[in-house]
Amino acid sequence: MPVRFWIIAFALAACAGPAAATPPDMVEIRDELFGVGPGEILVLRTVTDNLGSHVNSLSGTALVSIDAATGAETLWPVGRHRLQPADPVIPGEKPLAILAEPLEGARDPFAILAARGAMPAVAAARLAEEAALAVELGPEGAMVRHADGARFRLPAERLSAGLAEAAARIATLAPSYPRVGGLSLSDLLDGVAFAPEGCTLAQPLRIRFPAELPPIQLARVSCGTADDDVRISLLRVIPPAP
Image (cartoon, rainbow, N blue to C red; front, top):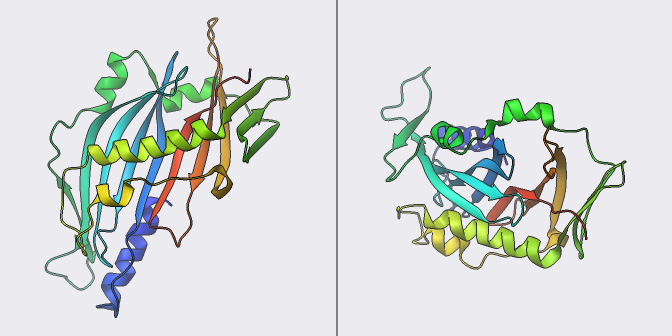
């Protein structure tokens, strides 16, 4: 769910006054393509936590390198921002304040991009091809097929394991912070699991390099509904089908 949803939702809640009941915990983890290299993609992965509150949220962002051959991930913290009611609230002014918070070890994502010899996602878009011929997600896993006969497949067990590992890994980068009800972000993400049957597969993107390098097939896997505590929308590398 886009960050703008959270901003609108919390703005409405702030203007409406105190709620009658404690809201559910809501955690959203989402990838946005940031860069592409010959053997990797780089995404900005943001976890947005409503802190168990109607009017506050905390968003932490990491740069993630995903190995195109193995799916292995390397993370660097980038930044953290808090959304909370403005104090004092001034009529006609924004009812919410967005505050940058210190984050130990925060890195410049553009410096990492340059150091790894990768190109920004906007530049890499010229290497991307049109939509795939077919995209499927089911009990057997994720499959992408192209008109030229190329097929890419990620088995269900690897897909589910990768999603769970990504959720657990992002929690390790989040410093401890207070939440309503006492549960931590690690508590909410510990043991979270998503079966392919409860997810969708969309936005297939095959990147072909000018040199004799294997193409990289990406697709977005989104899991969870409005009734779930944790929802994810992550970019996954789909390897060539054997």
